Length: 115
Length: 162
Image 1: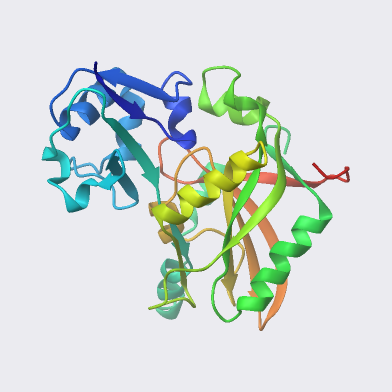
Image 2 (image 1 turned 60 degrees about the vertical axis):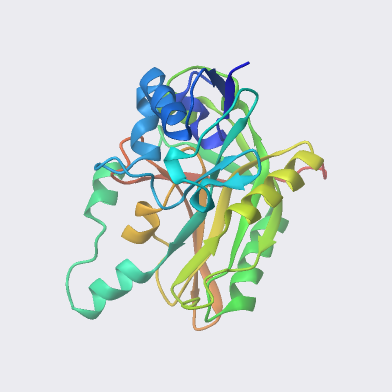
């Protein structure tokens, strides 16, 4: 019986519309590795460029946050469920800090995206 | 803009977001957008999905801003809050399709901090609150390459309650 990885709604478009995937693995890190190998477009949304889990990506084995276990080395056993749960953050700080220095705001990328 | 995705929302919910922003001023407010997105089951290209899908916001779940160290310029929704929002959505037969927050005394445009912490697919509604009074409201979606946000149209739809 493999380990089941639950894929959150915002990432399903990058995982063939699936809400879960199953892998025969021994650790959380292996499971996430297999997931992002099978669905390569997921990688940039889960990991930073240097391969660390993004700060707003929370991973649970059953109901335990892996930050309080062995992080990505957390062992898994058959029948476990790994859940990827978003946390949400934002705010005006980037804009604020920039404007206080009297510089151009940081919205060039927005204008490029909107054009 | 012809190729801009659009979200549908009632005037009642728009006013509710604006009122929440005024209520928490000078701090940021935040909450979950509950609704339906036809793109969840259609197509395979996320960008095309966004354009083809019909996304409708049918209920809100106002949340507590967990950033009590810097609530005037940041907001945070914890994983536990996200799970609670998803549970509330399921109980209404809906999905969490996005999030809203306010920008006190700043424009209703996403900051780099917003972008760095954004998820794809979700709609991010921002309401500007100037000197306590709600002003512009905009909606955005993270681009697939995480390099920016695409604007979304906001259409007011009058319809019967769910």
